[in-house]
Image (tube, rainbow, N blue to C red; front, side, top):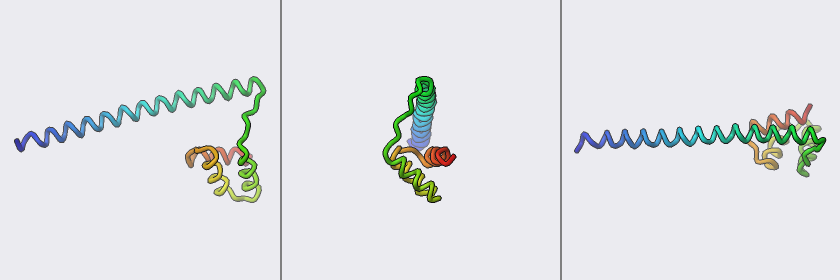
Length: 97
């Protein structure tokens, strides 16, 4: 009986690792598909000459950037868009150009 317990624990650990790995692969696949779709929508909007409407607080971000408050601008961008830190930093830096 004592020799069965380590085998059962090892099998459970292996099953957990496989489940996590499968979930991670699925998430990465969906993320890539979403990125491609967003890119296609951006291309269609550009081709049609349509600008994406900006949230009202984007003006606040521009004001913060004009004052040299990049970190606060990134924080506001994250609040407005729900984006992650790296994505918000990249977007704010694009607005600075």
